Length: 225
Length: 322
Image (cartoon, rainbow over all chains, first blue to last red; front, side, top):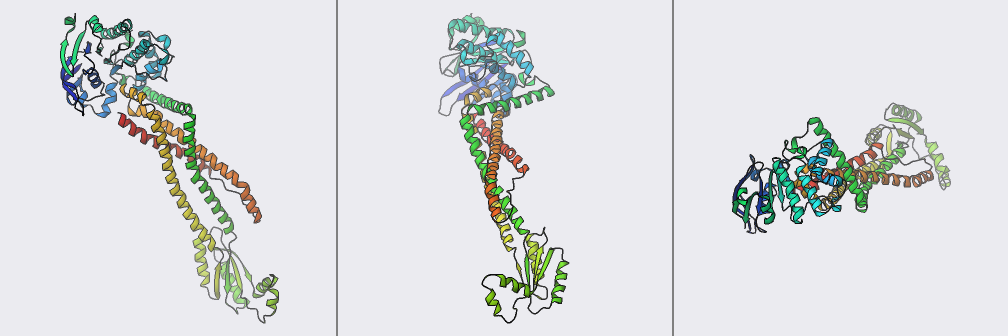
């Protein structure tokens, strides 16, 4: 599903965000990427989201080399990926429904399909009653759930989340993680960047550890246990 | 629950068939049209300023075109009473003059003619104040026979000029005085004015494109976060650009409409003074309105200019952001 081959990312000013990182993630697997701030977690996810290109190495999503994707391929490739951000990135002047509907509008879905799928996604995250509200009227946890609904509504092959529980209290964080494990059980590949080790330990999934851009550990789920 | 499971179906891009895809495309256009207008309405002052600048830029050449059109019409009206005076050589008898007049009547470029004898000329002069006593002192009548020609109505200035040259070359003709040379000068001036209007229109059209482009640039700058999210969600530049292109069309359409109203206002404001001026000269001239097709073409052309401005700027900005 995902394969990083000797991937490096160096910025013009000399900072190395990733240094020869290699790993694979199988389809349907849920993997955590952890490490200190500046370890390279977000850079790694941004490469999967085609927001960054490696300076060396290759990033594969199934049979597609993301590092070599042409500009015209970027948008269609991104439609195959659901993204959850720490700061939600919801459009504040649009309702919850309209925010969740965005990936379906972009993906040319009919109005009937959109209505059905958005309501299903909102039901899944427990926010069906908030469809017509503006995101600013919701709590941080609810806004994050809207972000998750938006990420899953177009049925992506891969779900990536950058610190999805960063601003949430432990109980809410577990609820959000519970949603991700449900998607994993349904066969979706899930990649989550998080520095919350206690949370990661409780979920017993494979963990990739980065430190100063280098992959220092790739701990299998059973080893976490 | 399975209905929303990620990855449970094909990727998002291939969800609909051709007909349905067209319906979705049409729906997004309708949505973009509506949302772009709502965004304009949400910033009434800024939008009105852009529309007003665009309207002024378009109304100026329109008003000048209106002026040219009416000067041309005035020239046409006065041109119809244009006469050409043919002065014959002294000492000609009436038979020769009548023969020449008959010859001229055959010409298709002459609508009519009248012959004025030397005596009639002298009588006219004597009726004018101050000449009567002086004329009584003359032993002979020094005036020649004069044939006054009226050129055919549809005759152009150059055709009149060639007719004058041909008549001047006839035997027995001393000289020809064309009372319509002013018309040629007016036509030349109108031609120059037309070129000025064209050049001016092109420059102001460019100004309109820049005004809309700058407004769209500001609009996009205020929506960078939204556009960033849309790009990450997989929106194509075309999808993102669409509402901004419609905004450009709205600016153009409304600016063009306002320009037409301004031109109509100028026309209305000048109608009464023009009629009064014409009446003072014993005429009944009324201002000519701009043709309906011009009034319809201005908002349509302005909408295209708005689209061009929005397209150039949004394309450039989105490329930078992507």
